[in-house]
Image 1 (spheres, rainbow, N blue to C red):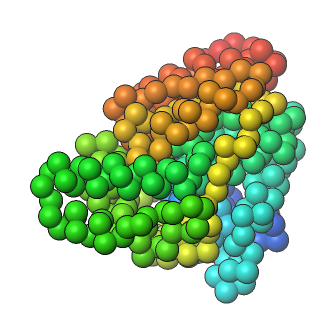
Image 2 (image 1 turned 45 degrees about the vertical axis):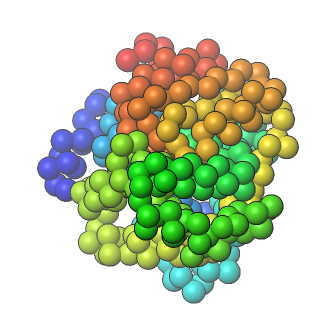
Length: 342
């Protein structure tokens, strides 16, 4: 961890490197703030899960972003360092979607004040894409643009498609064990009823096995292992991170999988979707279908042909190029950033 911390230390003349708590929603919540030039546009990443924190793997995918944005990683209520810093029994009653949206609004408001910015970028991944889309609807005047990765659209239909794809992979593979386990789950994700977590985890086991979460890999084991190398995480944080992941999922995940965002037909901010062509964890094809019908000042769907659900880790170079070439110019045109482009 020290090797990685030293290697990625921000040494630019006008750089910023902060790891701190912010009082949000009545509790201390942890953020990492990093960038080579504090005049750059601010980009807040809303991690997935619920509870699948991005801060401890950001050392791998984020370093290039920091030359063009001030990047904020935030461990949400009930997750990561924030989980470790608070009493779970106190936090548990507050683990609701509305409180998480309110936390997100407070975080954006704090960042705008802290950096003297009228607008920032918000990037939401998976569960974070639900929070990001709510922000884009409720506070468009605060955002340069919204970027969704693994965008939630119609979650129940996404579950049905993911289940059908996984079962087809198992049958094609001649995997009798997987076929039997999956067929025992049927009917799966009927209507808009919550999927019991026990059923969900069995389905995900085989979806991950066949590369529906990380393309051509069997699940997210490499990403999970990378957390142990995080410079931001203490031994205590590492001991608690999976407890926080389970805690967040137990309180939020079933309800998340009932969400249908397809009634959202208009946004007052530019919207970008970065979608992995092979994402069956949160259906990429459904997200693309949803975006087609959305009216926005500008919108762009970017396909990542060698990715599934973890686009920024699977194709970090293309993610960086797209953020710099397609997204950042919106802030430049608004006069947000240094006069000279790095």
